[in-house]
Length: 456
Image 1 (cartoon, one colour):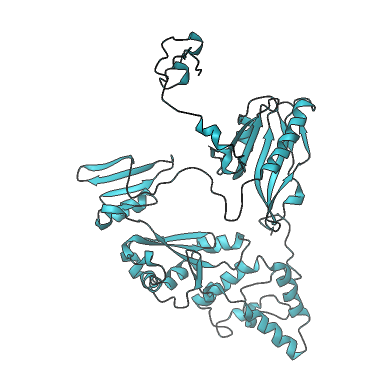
Image 2 (image 1 turned 90 degrees about the vertical axis):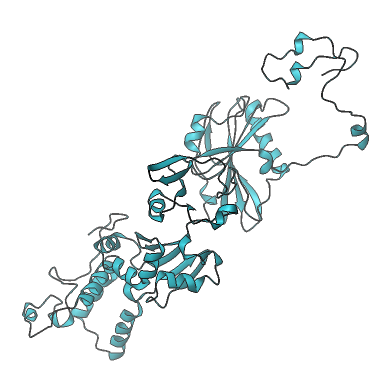
């Protein structure tokens, strides 16, 4: 047998070829193999279904621990312990690790984790017990449940199912399923936790809060099962749809201005305690970029910016890289792969070219972090563009959201001498040099130039 992760052979110890891991003590011969004579009904009663289930789980768990199990079985068969104390310790150690069916499920909601000791209660009874701490669970019609157990995920939807199904029954059904046992044999974690997670499937606001005919759902199956006349649900295309059930059929259209949904805008909000990148640090990076623009062959260059969680400061690293006028190839510095550092931003130059994100950048910048490109470095004021990558989905943001901007005060009299107006009323003469060819009537280029002494 090979380990599923690295395909390396697993040491099964010195157990004999016909070793039976499901055989009881009475069925084992002195050499650890199954005693065929013990198959007789008078020698050993048949295993119960519970024993078979437990031994199947133990067999699945033993796949991940066979390095120790094989040699231990061989030692027990070839060299039985003579010291009674050692034997007792060995037996006690075997009991220390509870079987899966003895391990309590865990209530998991809003950051709270707690063992569920009474598994005879229904999901709705658990909801009622937790509603005092989590008021959003008070309305059972708006709560569904997800059970995550190893690689298996099951759902309990609808108030009727939540009232009729006990937590212990659901856990047991999963444990005895072939799907679970097969997944357990392949899993790295042989002792998974059964997590019981409530989910508020809808939150009503405004005038719709008192209606029982409208709700928000996570998928179309959940919406259909609800029996609601109006269902709001997201779709794979990234849009939100409103679905209405009528006697003549089902109508579905994109949602515009739904009062049940929150106002959400694309962008970036830094984690608490992480400031903007200091201006001094930014200017050092720009100076470094300018060197490779003006003196280094007009080449691109890259730096990575990390947040030091211990030092509470930004750190700039220049990784080893091979550069040209239109490309950079680099490897991330392994010194910053420690959990102490958070990779905050990739920042590269476009030398004398304008600042833009190229198709090569789109292909490379898949990690969820910030990205900045600086161009026109041959000019006094360079161009800068910043964007976020949300798992490879991009959105440009104002660089001022992440870079510190230090304003310098100006004398108050400068402002006092300036009077603003929409346009100069006596601008009778049109200067063709300022005549805008665009369609924007508000563009300054469309304003008439005042030849009396003013200027645009």
